[in-house]
Length: 514
Image (cartoon, rainbow, N blue to C red):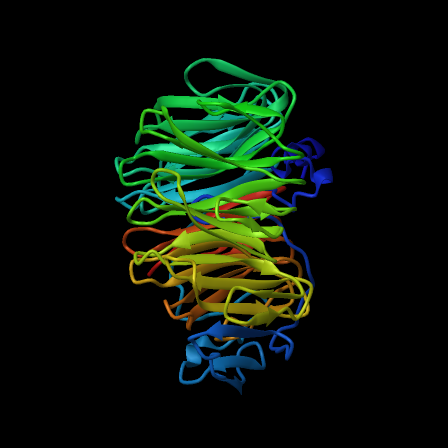
């Protein structure tokens, strides 16, 4: 990765020196950050790689038996011979998930496919950032600043429909994307220098500003806004739309920021903000979460009644509306008017949040040492273990599970389908077991994709990797139950239809069957 490109990530990490945990990227239809860890050998199982759970669901019973063939010793799911791991590291020929297609986006420099969303027709939207030249299928795009924002629309088969680039001087980063009921696309992020989203150039000076951009279904500019001052850093990291096509944007800021009503001033370091805009971009209401240290929001999800759950992290105690909560990751549920419904904090790092059709809240991420989501303590087996927890619409614990090993496992994307199934997308090193065949990384960071039912029971899990690092950033289900994932990778990665290669750091998007 080029030095200039790496430096640009400072926009979203909002000054790493302040301790904002690897917010190198965040939220979309799923979500984020980068992890760390080790490796494993073919055919090998790791007694330390396991899953644990609390709540109404018992731990998944042992379902593996040793077998041989192809690549030597393998581990198989009983009664499912073709699920055996019998090939080289990185190949798990399981019956699920069925790959429909995969694509990579790359050039001589670095590209990051940061977030993904789908519309009601099954079209796929990917947003990210790139340096140098990038061809998304409609011809070469060339960055003008340190790195520029890209937005691409693909049809349900992965064919290019249109793509856009935004950037003039300085780095511009696209962090999250949402699609409203009419097929309009909303992109949020942060920028330094100058950018023109379609209504004329706007400048952030030497600091960074947050932006919101609305495009129609054909990629034409509808409206755009930016928020910031001349001294502080501001970034928008999460976006969503409700049933009336209102837009909710969330992120963090330091200094002052005017969202459309009173000017906000950060209390200490970085404070979190949430703002609701109508479909024309007019201000509706806003929230400011402040305390000592830093606060940010980097994920959000709506329920069918247009209540919204926002997720983020705070380094100090904060009152989100229901009384002070301890430092850590937080969840806040707001009604359509922005009134506080409930809030909770946990000693964990939030990767993403989703809400199912019954208004249950699914949160996922990673933790070290131990964490309790309300159903009893989960203990990590290594440095960082992955977790997923389900809360009811009132914030009460339903079930929670941890997946770990001696090295790191991180979830950065979570999504739910119409049946209440839960998808987890992340990256890991070493070993991880979601309840089926234990997965082993080939060398460095590999991807995992797992599907659980609404009770937290394992349905399937798979691993994709290569000799270098692969990063998971975002996932979502489309209306037909297909699962779409996006992120970035070094070296090569094979999702099942041949290797995708890279020159530096490339983006990818892959679509799987229900």
